[in-house]
Length: 571
Image 1 (cartoon, helix red, strand yellow):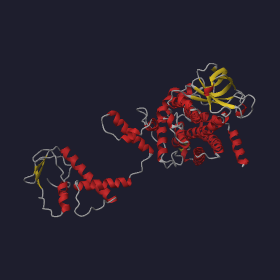
Image 2 (image 1 turned 60 degrees about the vertical axis):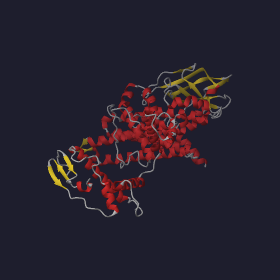
Image 3 (image 1 turned 45 degrees about the horizontal axis):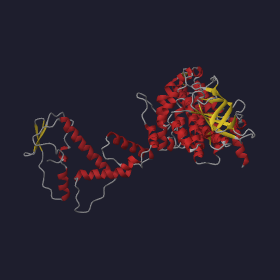
Image 4 (image 1 turned 30 degrees about the vertical axis):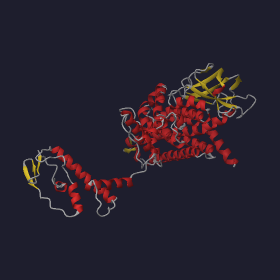
């Protein structure tokens, strides 16, 4: 055998035909040419003897055997690369010297390997929860492919269904779908600014899924007034139908801040469809938090899996902003409730499967007292729906009146405590306001990106529009409105997570500021397109129409001012 250190100086890029090694004569023949190597000198020190014995570069080559050129090049390059990596690791983190006389069974390369492993351990990032879940899922897949193989039992046994649903966020989207991040991290409107590693993973997963399943079809759904219920149900595979529902009933168990990040990313591709998903999430969460164990077990897994879709029913023809003035009656008759009344502007009415309806169970009371929440399945006798409303925006889903005429439901369908339904409704709306504000962020972000691209292409007065100082200043103003709105929304979402006593006012502030400002951002971007912005061939006109309603629903912005001022002045 000969040391690798003697071979590494030869040019492995030469087009060699064959290589042979004559051990007796200590010669190497390259393509018929003889090259003599200096004979190994006798080593005296223990370290040199170990290095010489360990550098067996061609253990698998017999004397006079032939090796193809490609094989030799591959082996030489591999050895040289290993030595180079080992030196780099050793320079970053030198391995401690062993006591005199202690030997290594792996020799010189073993020392380099040990040094590299120790260096990797020191530079290795701490394992996140997603990394642990990903590792466990990989272990389970290996176990499924080879049941007889030994595995890490602690990993396999700790895998729960909820963890699988979380990892679903990391699944690849439809084949052929491509997503490329539109902004670098240095952009002032980059939505990932200030997020940690896990939050960026959620954001990226939502962006990829939205780019594949929502963005390419949003304009078509709007033009044809088509409701993509099948797409909404399929989003359950990614965990989007139970974002902040508890994990034990099939939800993702995300925080409200993480939910806001996901909702914003999805709405950048289709605002109305994402808004419908947030309403469904609110219903699922209300049942999860306020329902009995039987209700949670019956409804939540079906809601988070997309088997059934839910709607939220509060507004009535005679009570909009004054929600506590609702007049739908709910009278107990034995083991049933009999409901009479109507709800208007119900998103998904007639298509969705479950309705969380606010009713008055105590007719003698007025205002918030005496209001309860009842769950009504779609096929309940006495439940019917009006005609689909013709709307300015949000055209890709139905909005109808929900009518109850002697609608009979079991008493077990009561959600929470009788007479406490208004509290349930308002707690749901706090998160709903953050969600709808997050939808505004996504729509405004899309409008900004479209305007930015247009300004770089369109020319006027001999130069592109992005060279015009007025438009530069206008874009700066719109960007500031967008970013300040994002900061307020995420601050309000964090306040819900932390159970901040001022959460209701902070959510109202976020909804007020974000929906109004993001609507202005979209309208300002449309203006930069000129006449083209008014055409359906360009995205801004649909964004303007879709965002306009956000200042009205989930509590009109005038009511948001009322909520803020009441809490502000009462202290």
